[in-house]
Length: 366
Image (spheres, rainbow, N blue to C red):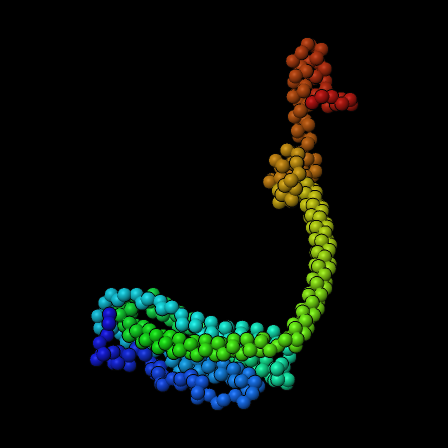
């Protein structure tokens, strides 16, 4: 829902606690006529990183001036909830700045690679490289911070978009203000990208001029760089060999450790098996259950009678000795009755055995 100019400021005052983005006049890039003339190659060469530093500083200062606060103030309660269209996610505006900085960095890197140290003005190349690296490092840090802030801003917009219908109506002024600030930042970033592109063109022209007059010194510098690259490749090859040897040593140690672990596990399994056998032996002597100890031999085939008696336990020797005489007498009585059912001589013989308590001394079946 669009807001009219008359009611836009009151709503913004209620819903946004941060001040408006600073949209002050931008500092235009100096033209060629406004720049002081370079007296020699050293001054022209030193202007480029300073202009790059100024441009990057302006870009980051513009972002710091125009970015909204990390957490907007809570919005006032709406009078009547109305359905509001979900805000559209706007595209990022960091790409032109990143592209310009990368192009400038690549241009200076190429110029420093193809020319000898300090050429054509001895003593100036080292300072230029250090200054350029410092500028690029500072720009990388500021760009990383800017990217994190943009990500936080996008998360806030996404959270606003996911609110309910009533919340969306109340948060619509905040979303509109954020969209306006993002659009303003995009315009200023595009202007900075154009200025960076112009600076990149100047760096490229300077590189071409240096290439045109390099001659034999450039060839010697390239040869020196090639020698350094060859030395680095040799060092890398040596490092790869050392890494391979280290990997083999680590693998051997791991194999030995694995073998020791397997041996320890086997010893532990044997110890557990012995302990289970001792528990079973004690249970057989005491008549207690031994099904828990028998579970240690899950992969071993056990006698059926042992598995059947594991839950309740087996009778002890004392129990067997106590219960055996009555059972033996009952068995003898049954045997005498069977024998007395025969002839008259068998009956007489059975009577005498029962009266006198005679027992057979030879083993007999049953």
